[in-house]
Length: 385
Image (cartoon, rainbow, N blue to C red):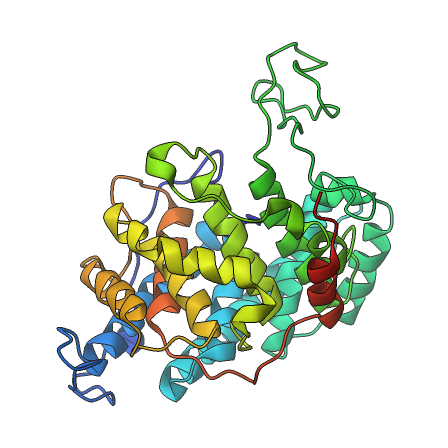
């Protein structure tokens, strides 16, 4: 599992051509009307519906490839869960649910038990895949018990790289050694095994992964190192967020994904609507930085800007949503995907397509609420220095 659902894998597999299932291709007559998305828009509701179904066909082509599913299966299950659980389009919701249920059955069959030598990262993958599979009605209570039992063997730092019950994300946390793969102690400047000079983990990336891991664990019902509230209490230390600063902010991209994943953790991955005053710094950052994403021609990131802003109540009547939607629709590739063809790895293409779909789709929210009230309170009352 790739924790950030965005960061590229260290050894990416080349993308195999997606096989478009005929049943998934757009029908000759779409249910959506050939009416502009807003007055003066160059795309129609039918164009958007067609783009979503083409994107679904592309991702499903990857998910039904045995090699790709073996590597990314738990994350791909989240694609089906995420789209099906919150889509307002009933036809899209039903299609994705049907396909997701079949993939969940395949994932359960390929992952019948938790290995005795499973590492913390493996348990995160099992929890993530199992949570999504349960949404499709494919439950396995024994696996949950095994994940819970195995997780108790590990410390918070094994799951999160730090212990949020005691400390904020360290600013001098060495990455695993690029040469020999060893993990190294805090503040070490060279690998203890091979002496290669250490590089430091980006604290915003560590924060993003911690948010995803703790949220997933709580939703699944297994403690993966800590609770979301334990991580959320340290958010004031990261605020306010720096912008692009004419290219002088080297952390800009990492900040973007930390901000969007803070919002996902609180809105239950697009199931709930949020009040801007609950997360004012994140809301302001999104509004101030959306247009820059168009400037750098990044539909993947734009998708995350749009779906998070929509959860704050913005609609296609808002100029920011209009600009972002128009941009994403204009960047879909001929095969139904979104992403840079020069990039060339599987994760990039399916994740770019996933987030672009999230950006343009319509949502049916459950109401105005947060995922975990204690986490919201913790980030409001957390340590700011």
